Image (cartoon, rainbow, N blue to C red; front, side):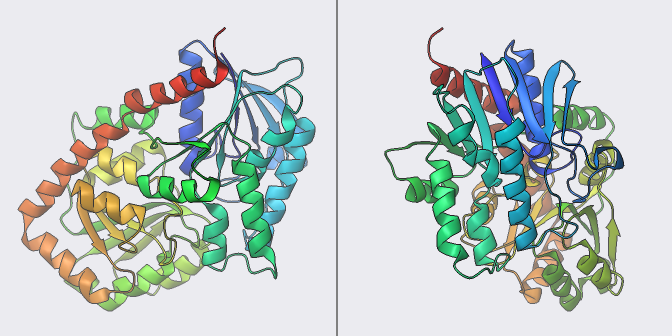
Length: 405
């Protein structure tokens, strides 16, 4: 098959969809397909272009045998609501003008939400060729931005929701990554459109590094929380730092390590500098990231209240793959909370509940058998997110869309 993958995040970007879609491209290449990628220049999670990419409009390159076409996108210095909208609009313009590979027509186009532009462009990119389309909903970005107040433009709510719906309904098949998100998706596009639940996966290089380090694993700390990933608005980490401070757990020896980058890093740095037991570091390379997961008591995953069923954090899967318990600070009705409760690999604490946080961490320290149960259950749960389970299902969907050859 000829498969055109469109993603704003791709190697050498780090975190989130960058790792997943780079891995998907590798899998399709190894399966013998002609996969080509249109993306932008690396900017994530720092929201800053590399010096060599500034002012460049388009570049074609080869990544381990995969043709990659990079087109320009406006990257705001501070990713506010307006800045993100301008970024999305600029990417749409670049994709429409320069996103195709000359003389090549794919059998399938696949792209992902939360970037509206790459979903919208599917309506126009192969307008007269009827190329089948698949959209993966990683994040209902419009709802999250509106509900969290990231976008506050007058009249924007109706317009943005309508654009998102129009973009999604351009696809022949739409997948999403949690059962609750599937319900939300079906209410958005209706039941006549084909929708599927197909979760994210533990990408290949991550699993290989985990397997390597497990041969001589580090000793786990009994009083350390570890957060790694995007430091954005919807994660609500500045609020959690207040919760951590008010709980007083640092005084009993608990440590919190935060590694990452994003829009909220400056706020987090200001709070962390005055917080006992809190360390702030940069994005880690994969080996160091795995070492931290294997040696920490629990992986911290936070969400601001009110995000509903808009997304499921990608950092959850590496925690499961390393057998690391999860401390989820989120609404009890969220996809994250449901996953933790169903898998029984951690506990859920309501945002702002410092007493609940203290009681939870005291319980974990005094009951090592409880933590060991969470570790075992995390590894069991990780099996449903195996690369060898999930990616063949995507490949099958692509075959169904492409039809007989």
